Amino acid sequence: MELSQEIREGLSLLVLLLTYLGLALGGLPGYRMNRAGVALVGASFLVLLGVLDLREAWQALDAQTLTFLFGIMVLNAHLGYAGFFGLVAERLLRLAKTPLALLLLLTLGSGFLSALFLNDTMALLLTPLVLSVTRGLGLNPVPYLLALMGAVNTGSLMTPTGNPQNIVVASLSGISYLGFVAALWPVAVLGLLLQVALLALLYPEVRSLKPLPPLPPLRYRLHRPLLRKGVWVALGLFLAFLLGYPMAQGALVAAGILLFTRRIRSERYFLRVDWELLVMFAALFMVTEGVRRLGLAEFLVPLATTPLGLLLAATFLSLLVSNVPAVLLLAPLVQEPRDWLLLAGGSTLAGNLTLLASVANLIVAEGAGKEGMRVSFLEHLRFGLSLTLLTLALLYALL
Image (cartoon, rainbow, N blue to C red; front, top):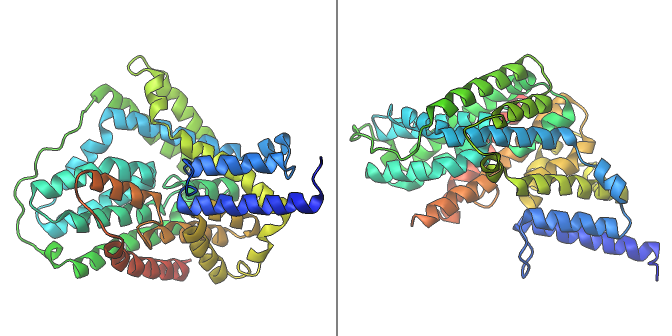
């Protein structure tokens, strides 16, 4: 029996409601699905209900975004196997002679690394290093873990390669790599310095200028031939970005060069590619197309008629349904380059507000929890609320 138009629309609305609820919660209660699973199930049900057919769902995918994200993941995998991130972290942290210097170097170092190599990757790789260093030096790890959470979010704002939502904005807007960086690096750098001041205010012990003992040895494996190749490819890729070469195309070429090797089996690269994130992106493009066809995003139009309204909409939607879905919902309403940058900034900086507002925050918290170190929701909130409000104001003022 064929369903009536009213019933199909009602069921489609229910599917979308449950999809965005699952994206907000990280899954649906009682079901073993993560965000990628929720998004894919939602997209498949929209196809089943006839909101989209398979061809339309396929056409909703943005190939440039998916290709760009995949290429950066392969680059990160190569540099991770080479020991690049451990080496850079050790060189930076060895410069720290006092607790305050350690806080500053950790914040700036992890922030700039996140800008280049994806914030979630940096959160995953740097959490055990931060715990090892702070415990080895006899320091309270909590302010330094908070510094890492804030830095990987705020620092990632400054480039299109810093986080998934920036990748979406750069792909859909056509803003060049250099144009993106030129507009947002002041906000990111000032935000990083602002978080150092906030943490120094909240945790008096990190203001200490008392000399630290020698840094304990950090555990990582260094593979010099892989390191040389990875650094040259990364430098070539970022130079190509600066010269205006298409970003998705450049990332794909870089991935191909790195995979052409006798040293590491291709399977090892693919093990470190975040396929769940790619599936979630693909499904979200389909879900967002379903929202557009049903006209459900029209309630957002009044919110996005002014730059301030767009910034607030991006921030609150990111808290409600996560940052990438928020960007995809608001993207059809954005026209001007400044508005695209506000969309990227609001969706990124909202991740600092609570412990649950960013995947990077959860990665750090879960990594610390496995080592017996708990960062509470309230402890993060008293840092994150002030940081978010101040950096959002900074973003609006500078743009």
